[in-house]
Image: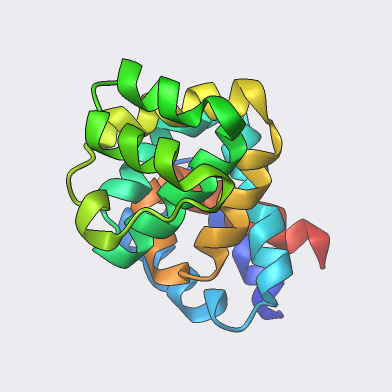
Length: 173
């Protein structure tokens, strides 16, 4: 039995309660670094859009919370680009005046620094991600692509979402 077959089998076992979170995480660790990044990104997009998982903005907020400062800044920069020219106004409404001023002065080329990103709460990211997804649905694909570059961090979306991800990857082979 090939590795991708094992992924599908493990995902089914998890759905029926026959696989533990630890088994899902360890299997994901084995395959995440072997898969092409594009394939992992497509799988993450599927999980973000699935009715079987929490809402996209909730999962993104959790990923943000578990990210290092550089990763947090990278994600925030993607969200701000997705929000477009009204990003500063939306940041100010979310109580992120410091970032709002930075966006207003930086125009399209704004770059949130890791230090600034550390001041943003996961709850703020959840609100911003929801607004970004409404305004520009491609943010889901962009966030999936971003986190496919950080496969270890993807484990923080939860074992159920990982099992769905692995099931999706096993069917794509």
